[in-house]
Image (tube, rainbow, N blue to C red; front, top):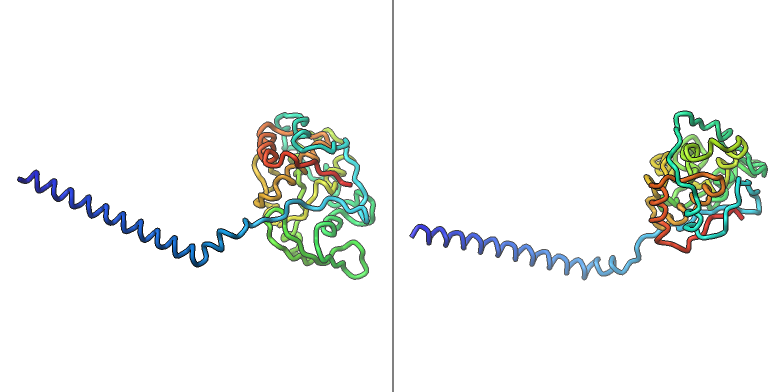
Length: 265
């Protein structure tokens, strides 16, 4: 008798659990239907948010070319990547920023320092300070790394809010072949417009000296151009990649096999 009663209670408990699960499923289904016929159908119809797919490189109207060590092939970034040497990192304990020359030289000898050249190139609605054709006072741009729209105003905080990123970080370059370059060649590497992009300051700080194996832009739409720029810089200055870096670059470029190298012309 007791066994039958125990079995009966167990069956009732399972039945109650089943009804609770059914009720929860019904509530969830009703909520989904309600969401779809209010905001949901419109959210599903909207295109995915997209940021910039590329950044400016060169404006011959007021910029002059910075000569790299080697001519970069006008080819797919994937094919040029395959031609880069693969090695481990050299020690970084002897790296100094001064090895690449004074920051923001007028390397192209157009009369303006490199930081202002890149701000002028990358920003929209650019205004200059009084009696200057070089010093950028203000402008705005959509940051290629985060897709945020940023207003630039020259001032004490501007260098933190808007920074000029070395696409191939100088410390990374130092560990992958730049130690073998001449001082002038390293100066060109640090000031080459192919290797420079105006970017959100916090995003640039987060990147630090990382290569493609450890950091890529949050804005996925920009990654193909970003990696192609890195490949182009490394090809132009005879730098190598690590195996992990090459693998990461190939994963990105596999999504855009027709992506070309980035040339300043």
